[in-house]
Image 1 (cartoon, rainbow, N blue to C red):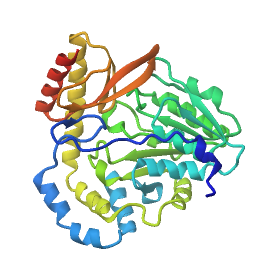
Image 2 (image 1 turned 30 degrees about the vertical axis):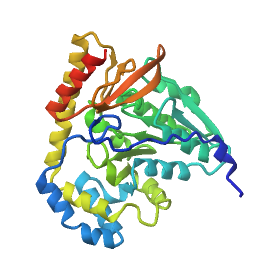
Image 3 (image 1 turned 180 degrees about the vertical axis):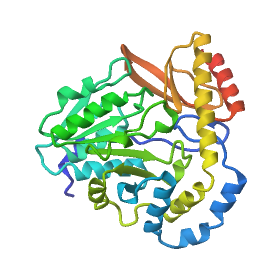
Image 4 (image 1 turned 90 degrees about the horizontal axis):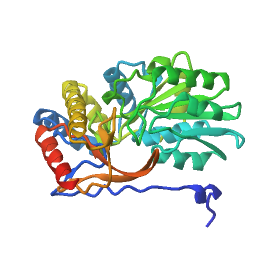
Length: 342
């Protein structure tokens, strides 16, 4: 069997998302709060047709552009933000002499796609969980084709200032590169979106409906960029960019935006309250602007599925990553589980 020689360079991470019936899933930044019966009834009323027929992709673009309030020619859609990321890596990797700059650590698929499509991979390293333009600029030159920034920054949950992102957008423009800003968690952050830059700089903003949009199982990702960039990105899309049920979800969600707004507000309030509570109890953590928080140490929390990860913060340490629940009773159970585990 002939196999792409780059295959051996790929360090693929497979995530175990098995269902734990008796435990709260707080390991994958998913929505814990059920949707209203009214929303679900409207969504499921169309599923028979949506399952039997191929998706109406022009309708999906029209619905999502109206939902976001953006120009339809600036919008691209894909099966989850990771597929949107792959599209950008594919588009911007044509020459073997071109390089890509990614954060390390970062979302695992950055490394996968970099290994698939680029010979030269440069890695920007954070300091104490924060990454800035200063960490990127020495790595950018005329060979650079793609610069990837995560804001808020996975896996730490910290943010990069808008001024730093603008600095990187300018550097991309000066070197003929493109800046990709992954804003998977932007709705939970006190940050200015890089969407404000797309008309002036070569910037692609990638987002998802999995986190704030609460639809991780439907796999809906999208990007916003100048119409010329977007036109080229669309050339790399799948024949059907998203599924028909995903299109139905967008149509339904646009009528129930208040449920998203309420959920995001609840998570932000609970996150800030949990961080205050952790400080009060002398429990170390990394302050976060996302819908998850990293607590220092390996905590086995009774009745909760969480994620344990090794990260560099001064030195390599084990952290327990916990998604922030929106439901008050789940938050109180989480606090009790933390106290029992420390």
